[in-house]
Length: 454
Image 1 (tube, helix red, strand yellow):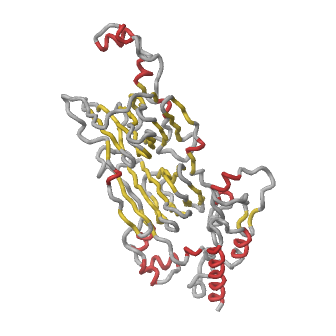
Image 2 (cartoon, rainbow, N blue to C red):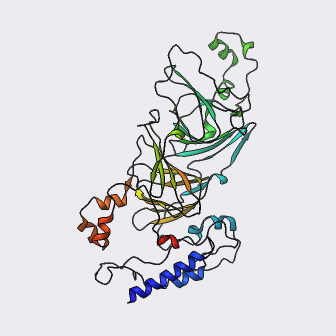
Image 3 (tube, rainbow, N blue to C red):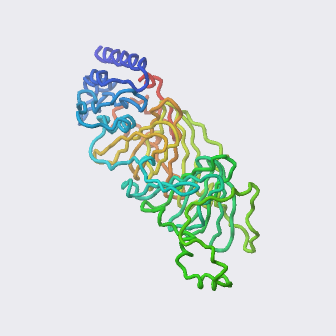
């Protein structure tokens, strides 16, 4: 009877909350629900004799979102108190799980969120670039990112890096060129959602076409957390620091032929848009054996119960030896399932929508972060985590890894493929529930119909 009564209370609470406008769940409601005894709703609690207390059933949903019209407060149930000092309300609205964290958070996890909006921007005639590396996000030791924008015709000048470069085109089209260590060349125009990849040391250039009247913007990811875009090896920077007579000797001409070279780096500069039918110059060595471009936008996504996924790694994008990606969509209320990555950190970039991610770092350490479009998230290997859509629109994001092959381990699949008695001994759950566990990865799981009412 107690179980039915408490269930009725929660169902009434769910009906009340679902009738409220999105993001308006009040602290008073959470306070009333948090008085339920820990473990009350456990179907097996009456028969169990656990060696530790049962996990709490107290709600831990985000208490607001960035659309609310009030100043949120650091209060969850009976915990916390209102702010008396200055408050940065816009940031607090975007980060409910930092200001009023779930009661399941504990211990110490390094900050795992960085918005590109907080990165210093480098402005040039023709475009701009801003970066995130280990200085902005110390937890991100394996990968760094750059957000770059080029107006039509603008060129990210001929250059090379000490790290591998992977790219995803956010908007517009980009013409990319390169020459490899064997003198084989490459030229291709890539579109929104497509990828390119240049190994460390391979010289290349990037130029916006005018297919989109605004030019292009793209995300760059490098396989080193301490990568610095400002230390790129640039053609004009190099020649500005070589005696002009040496340059002339190298090219077999006189010094006057180089009177017009820049005296310092160009980095990003305006030019005429390249033609769509541009081709690479004839090359006696031939073209590169593995294309540096990949038309990821044309790869069909795999439909899932709560979204979609598609993967590009060295099995499909042969040139991408050190960086792999999963492009994921998650429908409202659904989630990227509880999982971890065995050996490589996850560098996530959120394209659109609202999400939260809780990271479990072992030894009782866990922390929850909220994300919007333009944010970077980071989950070290092998931290357990999930990504939940907390908004009313489709969540769209990238999972990027410093590896040649995408890998993850699903919690649900793991528990489905070991002896049921072992699972039951750990979790004190029913045989029927264990039998329902899927033996194949869900990747993205649809919301439970009951939970959708919250």
